Image 1 (cartoon, rainbow, N blue to C red):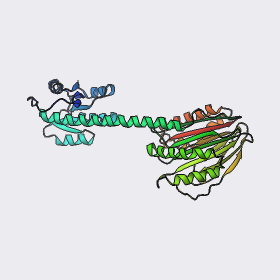
Image 2 (cartoon, rainbow, N blue to C red; image 1 turned 120 degrees about the horizontal axis):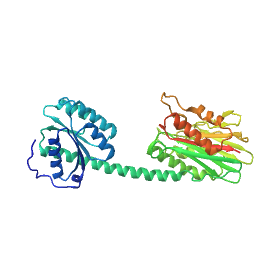
Image 3 (cartoon, rainbow, N blue to C red; image 1 turned 90 degrees about the vertical axis):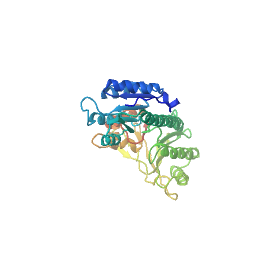
Image 4 (cartoon, rainbow, N blue to C red; image 1 turned 180 degrees about the vertical axis):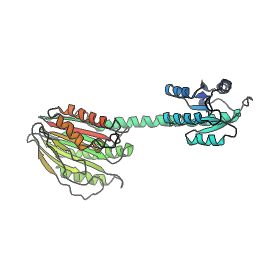
Length: 388
């Protein structure tokens, strides 16, 4: 190795970085630590691949500087290749700078194919190793700052979106209501609302914007903004859907749309008047176990500005449970690929005929989560209305 003095590197903010150094030879570890500490780096040295993974699990490093050959195989670098793959499985972002023997270009290429960021050949030239290390550290720290900014923005977006949902659901005479949404990312494209419009009229809706993440959340916010004043106008469900559709057609991209269910509950006459714009039909489950889908068929919102929507009515009886949901709930899949499905919702509702709305909601969400081992692939929302 070249231990000549280094003069061309001046201390910078990046040289306070933390470097994990891995090599099975104590003299090499000592030499690397001496070199790096002289340049302002903070180092931790390990001599076994397993200790690399232990260190990464317990602390955060700006770069891993690792040898490819350990005790089991001193020439082929198989342990090093496995370690690169294991590091990448643990952390997709931390730079990995590998050290290979002269003439081991094929090994270096394979290491980079598995996720290494760059390589240095042994015996190394100090100026070359430091230059490559500096490049990886700067890249990692810039990316880390950018990631923190993205996370802060997403966190703020999530807080804003949470405020678009109703806080405390309104009390409805002779009814219980509960609702929840579970975004698969920081923000999502599902939406629901319950608004007490008058002493006897309550508006209920649920919507699902095609797609996930920020684009879906932005379109969902537009839907919420357009919907809010329409609700207070006391429009019939079909008229409200028609007006909302025309508004969304002006701003919805060609490859996007929104499914939407809107109903108005008359709690004096126990009648629900509703319109379904391409959404999963809500299910009305009676105390006797009978299940009826509410499907007043209509096109999704945002694509057909002149669509004429229709509406239907249904009478609610004591003990009826209305389940309004998005497809992320019923499409939650188990290990064999089988979806939770509408039958999964109905089965739980049938098994709990006298369960309160909040308790039934929790049991359904728990059942869906258990079915998919907690791995929802789309935003999942559920609203439960119970006549008492």
